[in-house]
Length: 458
Ligand code: EPZ
Image 1 (cartoon, helix red, strand yellow):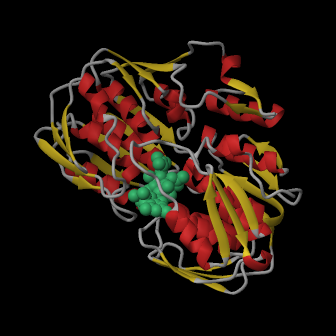
Image 2 (tube, helix red, strand yellow):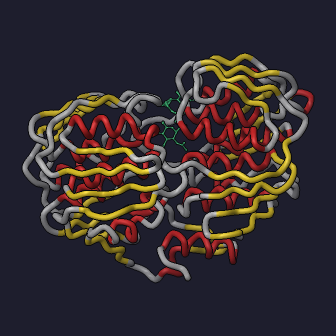
Image 3 (spheres, helix red, strand yellow):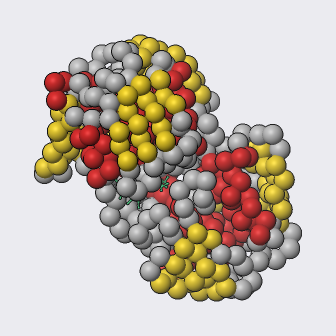
């Protein structure tokens, strides 16, 4: 039986080849009656940022990849649509398991409209270049934090591996010299998740050995490396800052299950910290949540780790804290808006510093409409805690800003209406259902007919 809107969207896609449209437009909204403590259990879905890399990684594999624990979110749907548009055979086995067979792909030119819908479409460059020695893709789209999101480190790596890369009229056109990439030593000038994964994808079938230095270490990087290794790749050191890849002749099909989503779990941890109450957050890897747990404890929230779950409880007042986002194992930038929102309700003044992106504070103006007292000075937000937030009509500017708006609405007195929820649906599976089950009053309000939100792919 279909329950949950995102599941509906995914199954619709699988059955009929539909895709989301009018992405980012505020057609629909969430309406939240806040002030209710959360209580109960929430199951965490598969990691978005692993799934959006693993789906294109299947291009490198000869044979069928069975990927389990794929979250039912629009970013995963779009990646699957891109593979389908290239000629891959994509079949649903269960609601979270897909069989992907890319042996039918003959073109290295990806669907440009689809690619512009998400940032992670840049993984098509590494995968197509690694497999076919060439790739023509659109410059990636995705969440707009208000700053620049360059891919120069990806391009620098592909170039070192013998590719000629041209960026022209919104396209990235890459061609490997002699039709095949060669291994290279690559030092990343910035610690980049996307560049690390993309260069791993490009290197697994390249001639010889590739070394990526100053690599990012996020859990999803290890997960993508494990996926590729399980299909026959030779990648060592993922999870450290030096990754060594020995190119192999071919990868062959197999099974793999995606890790739980660190940020989805962190978001619900932050939500219960804000509202008060008690949540058992299940199907997590507690080690991946360490920095979030520690910060919440500093703020007066109780966090008890189980083997694959965390219990998060807040009974007393929230205390102020400072935090700075950094690449893993530092505090994740993708939790910054949610934590800033909770700190807006803590006693005292907190300083939040964004250490990854130039600008990720666009959402602060929305919180101000609800009574938050936050001043942004460059990369730092100075948060003066207030007693309460008041419901308002606000907007999600990107995925994590959207998650922060939901938390604000859950904590606020009165009714909050959130527009721009398409962003939130990029990364949170069944958010409404999960929150409703733990006592939140949150509703999806459709302003148009459901049919208006999807269109035939081609
Ligand atoms: C990934 O983006 C995530 N997206 C982001 O999550 C996350 O915020 C980010 O990593 C940091 O953790 C996906 O995995 C799909 P980066 P990515 O390359 O790979 C600079 C979410 O909410 N940089 O690690 O694009 C860049 O400007 C999303 O789930 C360069 O200068 O991020 C930034 O300051 C949003 N040149 C820093 O590095 C490059 O070539 C880190 O970016 C690449 C990046």
